Picture 1 (tube, rainbow, N blue to C red):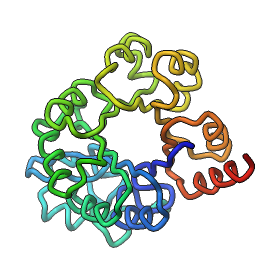
Picture 2 (tube, helix red, strand yellow):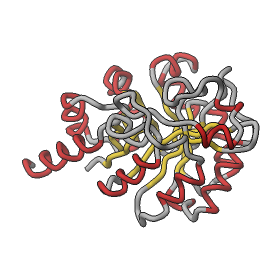
Picture 3 (cartoon, one colour):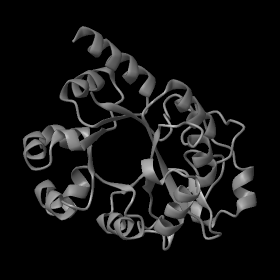
Amino acid sequence: MSRIMAHRGARNLWAENSLLGFRKILEHGFEAVEFDVHLTDAGELVVIHDATLERTTDGTGPVRNLRPEDRRRLRLRGPDGQLIDECPPTLEDVLAVIATDPAIEPWVELKSDPDGRPYEGMVEKAAAAIRAAGLANRSALHSFDIDVVAEVRDVAPEMRRLVSVHAPSAEKHGGLAALIEKVRGLVDVLGVHHALFEAEFDLIAREWGVENCSVWTINTTELMQKWIKVGPAFLVSDDPVTLKSLLRQDATAA
């Protein structure tokens, strides 16, 4: 049976990448949680998806420009657009919450700066934070950037690795078949957008194996029911509560 990965801290249910969301995820007993990390010029690893602040906070400008005191003054937006009484957390903050659960797996996406460039030194800092939290044996680091994932292999070989791919990123590598050859032996899991997965299903099944994939981001009941039947390793959703209910129904009906 596929396992559930709560995407961006289950952003359709709670404020995206918030400590509130991560605590709720633990309460619901999901198997994995995915979230994003940027590195500031001040040296903080901030858990936030975008390279800029506007969409998910009441701030403006690049994440990398944040000073710690400025970050703490920011407030996150919930799914309804209203501000909540939380600032964007650091990676260490999030890992401290996750470490209270004995089983859940953190899948940490290493993001790029506003110009699409990897942050220098972020792989080392993220790996060190994960090790310090005692979570290296159940954590994974991932990126759209194959070079970043190759750096993860060198810096943190004990952690699992994933490359995310959708149609535009596959095309940059000459198509999905070419990308698969580039990451063979490098990654443990191929994270495939559901539209590309559907379009290239036979290729993926033959050359990689559906059981070695995650599919993202499945948020409608129709998509959830469809991919539950397919059975990849992970089903990635912004609404893992609904997904869990549908998985249980499917298991009961089987």
